Length: 118
Figure 1: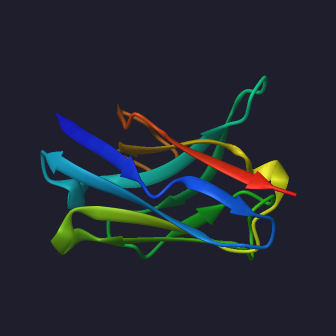
Figure 2 (figure 1 turned 180 degrees about the vertical axis):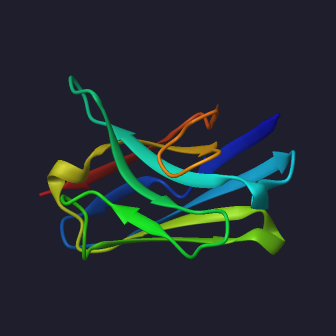
């Protein structure tokens, strides 16, 4: 089992930045790929970004490419999502997930709300 806890969400104006954190406990975090998903009101969950267990491979959805940066610190059992140049359409609940490959989600966090005002 892996327990994931997100933090860092909040309210920010368009053009601003936020950094989300995903703290892991339980089984070895470094053996899992980590991903970020988001769900906007009335929409399906979207896969936003992913990073391999070593950090050597990353994925970004086209909608966030060039604005978001995913990273991880295995020594701290923590993953991050740096979000810059935020847009109102980035408003959503953001979830981190851990799994055996990019985009997989065997374990989920509880989510953190990100609201971007125009």
